[in-house]
Length: 134
Image 1 (tube, helix red, strand yellow):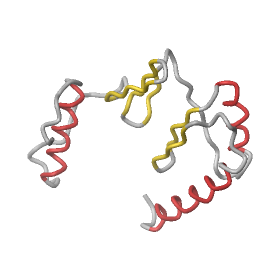
Image 2: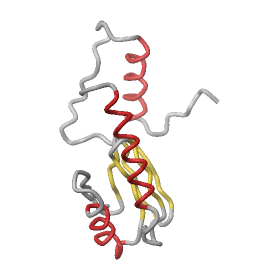
Image 3: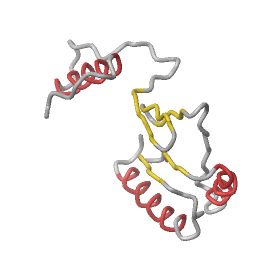
Image 4: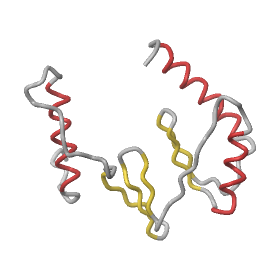
């Protein structure tokens, strides 16, 4: 993935970029959250195309693509976000190409990674599993 410093430089670049974005941001921008280079934003549909054009005009090396919700749903990373009125409901999202294969428990990976795989797969199967840590 390149130099260890590349992640830090990318984060600094995106933070500076965001500082410039929010000065002229449309007033309908209600939410902007980012994980590395993936952004989840909520704004009025009428402002979407103009805002995307504004983002892509700020720096020639940084170009955004937009995926709009379909039938009130939008996947973001491994989360399916569903809009019901003004409420957002989340669930585990798996791409159509998901194979249900996971990390071999006999592999050389740390045990915490193996446990995380089991926990993630379990929570994706039954969305109503209670959190027992409380």
